[in-house]
Image (tube, rainbow, N blue to C red; front, side, top):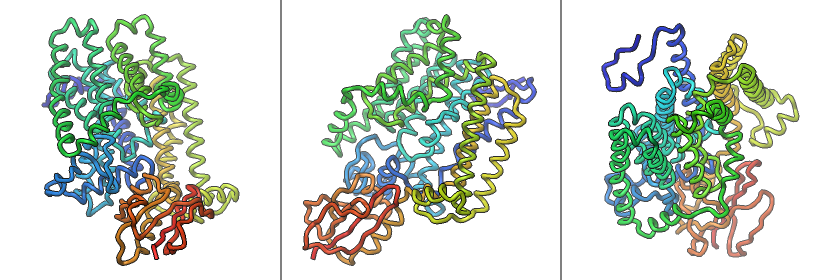
Length: 555
């Protein structure tokens, strides 16, 4: 029996109702994904390094409204600007959407929290595309396992709650991947999904994710299963073609308003990393893609006789190999750049978990129980230490790292942490071990551990990482009249956060400003600007970061 829903997606989304518990499993998936998505999106300031530039760019777009003449004269909405300086590292689609959320929700939420809600929407699209891809590649019910494995990946959870354009690019890539899984059965629909995914990937993060999509599509076209179907081949070619006008339009507009910046950006996009970073990403994937990576490797071994002549394996392997080659040659050493590799690994793992031997499934399940149980216990122990002062050594360490002497007891967050912990314990006790339950338990453990940590430790993490108090205090000590503020030893992330929190834009030290901001190591003044400068303010960010600042005024 199927759901009879009057829309065009019925065939792909219909769920069999004959099996007992199918509705409960779907409800569990929705609940887990909702908690996993929502927890950590709001309640803290932008954290460097990934959120600092994004926050400054969004603030610049808000300061230059879309319909104002100045915004088009300066090109802020075409080529992003952070802290008053060009920041054309990625095209602006992600920042457009984040700014729209910030302006819409600004009466209710701070700019950064509203922008993070847009990240939640991008990740919601990604989860939907991943679930549909798993179902299309394998069978009904595999979509749930795909999402359970995906949200359980150790490297995804922090990135999925961070204000950065790579999250939107991941949505575009997942949309294109789903199009490639669907093209044999629904070529017209796949064509539009491929075009949309390619356009989103490029306008969010530039040439690299777009090259992943285009290269994988080109490889798929030459597979026998596609060559024999003219409609499928035509759909893929048209999908790429339909995305080109949007890509070309942004390039032309960028050349019009920021020609020099666009040329430099393009040169950066096509610069090959020598030596390559493939070894780094291989080591990163060993933990970053867990448990998808071992399950995918098992699936390749288990179905080794069908790997080279079955479309589900051909597509996933082409995507992974091509994306891995591109990432190693054209991206720097950052874990975030490995995000696209989770898509094909999860797709392979979703169907492979059914074939795990009982001992391997049990080992995976127990490893998850031990890992997440330990993390939840550490979260509670650290919270108890900060609340009561015992154990004393743990309290001293956490107080040193966070700069807090105690934390306020939040009834709401405490109740959430207690409820989630009890749910996890109940699941551990009542769980029936099976292949599928190992993936489900892993996703539940990841969600519960993330929720408990963000509920109990967020005040400590925020105190250690936020720059809002120190930069707002600096703004309050500024003289009534000054020309500009130059900087010495100030990192780009700190400059972006200074612009976001205090509305201050720093200039080069050679600009002849009457104020000078210097960053030093706490307790050590490495630079002496001269006797003509007098100290008017100094502050320290936190003990963990070892950053202190001095603001001086020219006599």
